[in-house]
Image (cartoon, rainbow, N blue to C red; front, side, top):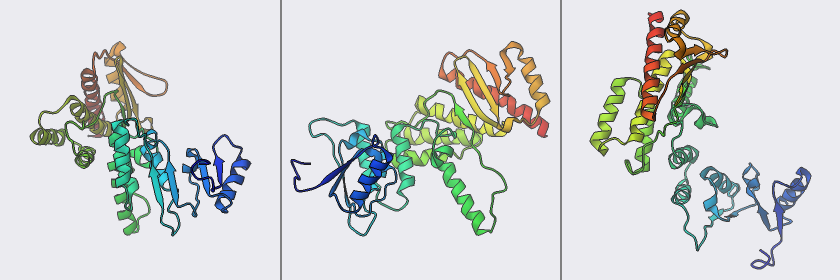
Length: 321
C-alpha cells in the first residue's frame, strides 16, 4: 500500500488486537480519519461501515463461499455504488472447487441470494448429511427443502391467523458413513441436481423411491453407487419417521438407534424384540438400542440398517393398530 498508494492513509485491524484497540481503529476509519482499512476476515463479522464502497480480497481462492459472500456484503451498504474485487494468483492455477465458488459468487446478485448460496455451497462441498438435521445454521439444520416447506407452512398459517403449527416438523439424523450425493459426472447441470435433491427429500414410500430411480435411469443412464446409497438413505429416513426414530448411527460393528424424546409406540414389543436378539442387541442406560452386527461394506451396512428399521416399524405400528 505504501508503494502503490503512498498518498493514502491506512489502518490495520485484526483479531489479535484488544477489544478497545480494535474499537478505536474501527471508529477512526468510520469517521474518515483513514482512507484504507487493511484487515483480516474479522470484517466479515457484521461490521457496518456505510462509507466503505470498495473491497479487495487477496487470494479469494482460499476462502469458503459463505465467507466470500459475507465479505462482499461489507460494501454497498449506503447509496454509493460499491465494488468488490476478488483476486487470485496470476502464476498459479486455482482448484476447480475454488473456481466454482468464485463463479457462483459472481452469479449471486439478486434478492434472496442467501438461499441460492446455501444450495450452491452444499453442492460444491458435497451433500453430506443432506437428508438429516446434523448441520449448523437454520437451513443446514433441517435441510434445504424442508426449510422451504417449513417457511411455506408458516406463511400459510400466518395468513390463516394461526400462530403455531398443529404438528411439529422434524427430520431424523442419519449417520451411515456413506457418501450421499448426485455426482457431477452423472448429472452435469447444477440447477438440475438441486431440483433432484429437493424431490428426493419429499419421497416417503418405496413406490415413490422406485419410481424416482426408474426416472433417473431413463433420463441419465445406469445409477452410480453414490446415487444408489442416496436412495437407500431416503428409504431409511422414511422408516425412521414411521418408527419415531430420531437418530441412526451405523458402522462396521453395528447400529445404534435413538428414539424421539426417548419414547417408542410399543415398549413391550420392543423389549421382546431385543430379548429375541439375545447377545446381538441391548438397551443402553441412555435408552439407545444397540444392534451388534458385522458389516463388511457400505452396501451391507445400509441393507442391515434398513432391516432393523423395518422390524421396528412393524412393532410400532402393530401397537398403533
